[in-house]
Image 1 (cartoon, one colour):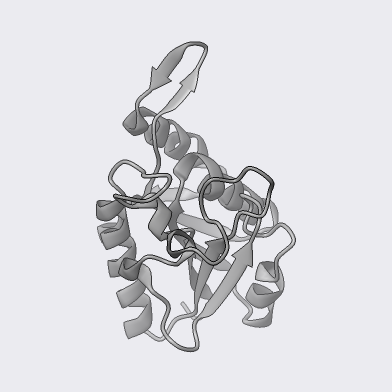
Image 2 (cartoon, helix red, strand yellow):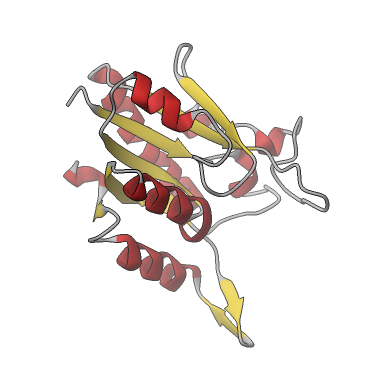
Length: 179
């Protein structure tokens, strides 16, 4: 188990009620991620928090220096826990995440985060491509409705479709209580 780490992706204030990019069921997912975090802390297992900062022109959320860009209280890092800052959906792109995992000889990742269809998806796929064994806590993730072809796809369907696509080849998708 010492080769296993928890990766908490972008659970930040802007995704919660009142934030600039509110997600459906963010509070429930944040609470599940918080319970995972507590279990990893109890067992003194490695924890990596990922925080997205939007630096692209026209960005409307996760703006540097704003309260919305801060990590949500449900998963707030403790002193000594790694916080990786990123500017792209993929948590490995132009960050020190891979090197930090290698330094601790991590082979297995347990993942929780937001948004399921964007940053969680991009990161889980990259992690699998890099050879990590990934377990995704599906109920510790959240997303929002999406539009395509003049149709609105409800958040629950977006979430389910992305979890289904990741399950199997890229990750083992489970409920938090199964971990």
